[in-house]
Length: 75
Image 1 (cartoon, rainbow, N blue to C red):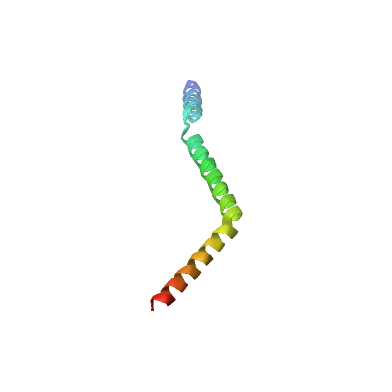
Image 2 (cartoon, rainbow, N blue to C red; image 1 turned 90 degrees about the horizontal axis):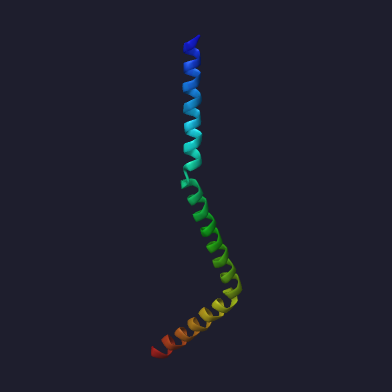
């Protein structure tokens, strides 16, 4: 009977140690923080592209036309 109590106490101590270790482990928290930062950066990039998309499209169209004109004039 004493063996059962000793084994049960060892299991309880092992579980308590594991729970304490999990409470001290902060590596998962850091990964979540990095994920949130990456998500915020992605949202900022998407918002910038959406707001400037038309202007950039016009800039490339103008530049392409200018290059086409310059290339046609060189031949």
